[in-house]
Length: 148
Image 1 (cartoon, rainbow, N blue to C red):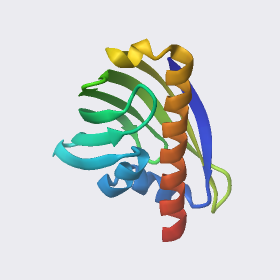
Image 2 (spheres, one colour; image 1 turned 90 degrees about the vertical axis):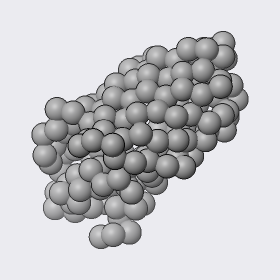
Image 3 (cartoon, rainbow, N blue to C red; image 1 turned 45 degrees about the vertical axis):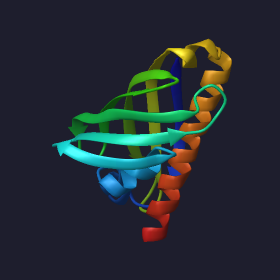
Image 4 (cartoon, rainbow, N blue to C red; image 1 turned 180 degrees about the vertical axis):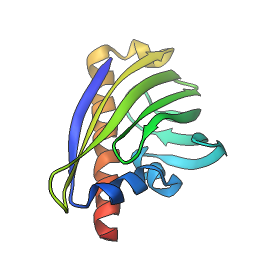
């Protein structure tokens, strides 16, 4: 399943970049995150509880940032497992300045699911994934804008 979109954030690109590389801000990107710990440079292990049709449950997984191009972009890869199944995905996050106080975050990625999650159906999974990504990006935007 392919995901892509944008989020406008009312903050300078440098501030958004800093947030995207801060463990506390990264936690806001993943709705339901209970823990996220750096285990190596740019590699994190965590636990998230997600509630929603067919994907409800606790997931443990790893998140890795690579191809880091400050303050413009990086690749993100993650995988998680839980009772409902497993999720694996890769993507790119890119930041563009829209003036001194506004940044547009562009994201695109590919996600694969397996186990009971896959039985829910592609349309429901895609809708749930878009909802989770949207919630995470809005939370990140609010966090960064409050710091401004």
